[in-house]
Amino acid sequence: MRHVSIAILFLVFICADLVSQTDTKVIWKGCVKIAEDNTPIPFATLASYKSVTMSAAKADGCFELRLDKDDSLRVAAIGFLPRTISYTNVERDSSGNMIVFLEVQSYYISEVTVRPEQKPIELNLPSDIGSRMSDVPPNERRARATGPVSLVYNILGGGNTPSPRELERMRSRDRQFQQMESIAGREAIETISGLEGEQLDRFIIYCNIHLKVSPSDNPASVNGRILNLLERFLEKENDQ
Picture 1: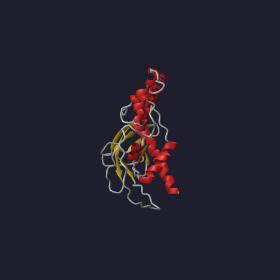
Picture 2: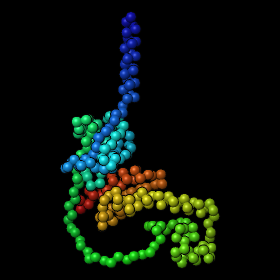
Picture 3: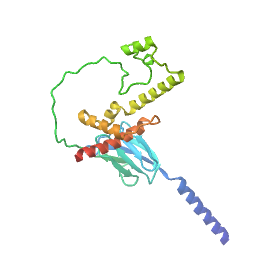
Picture 4: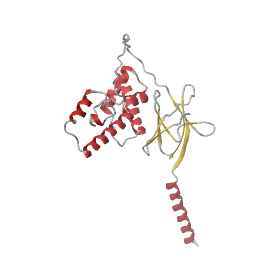
C-alpha cells in the first residue's frame, strides 16, 4: 500500500509539472490611453520582448494578445513617451482589463528660422519617377512616350538590347525597389514620424544611414524599426 501511495504522488507531481509547462500563456487585454485626459490612442505599436513579435492596437486604442505571463510588452506611439509593462505591473480598470497610460512627449525648439514665401515650380513629370533610375529600358516603362530619350531608344533599338532573362531580372529588381520605397520611402517615414520641414529632412537622412530594409520585410517590421530610430534621433536632437 505504501508503494502504491508513493507511485500516485509521483504521477501527481509529473502531471502538475506538465501542466505548468504547457499552460504558460495568458490573455493580455486592455487599452492604450493618453495620461492627461484618458483619451484612447489609436494604432499604438505593441512589441513583445520574449516572443519578438509586433502588433498594433485597434482604432479605439484597445488590444487583446495571447502572450506568456512572464513576458514584457513595449508600448509606443508617435508623439508619446514609450513605456514597457508586465502582466502584473500595470494599471487595470474595474473589469480587470489593462490600462496603459502614455505621457505626451514635448520638444523644446531652441531656434526658429522664418523664410519668405517662394513661388513653387510646377513640373509635369511622370507619376512613377522616384529617387532612383530604373534598370528597366525606357521602352518598357509606363512613361515611355514622354521624353526624347525614350524616342531615341525606340528608334535606335536602345543600344545593347537585354535578353529576355536579363529583362525579367531588371523588372523583378525594379518591383522590389518599388515595394521597399512604398514601406520605407519619404512619404512612409513622414507619416510614421509625424515630423515636417527641416527636421523631417534630417530624420530621412538619419534613416538613410541607419535603416536597413530587405525585400522580405513587411510594413509592420519596418514601422517598428523607424519608430526605434525616431526615438534615438529625437534624443540626439535634444542633446545638441
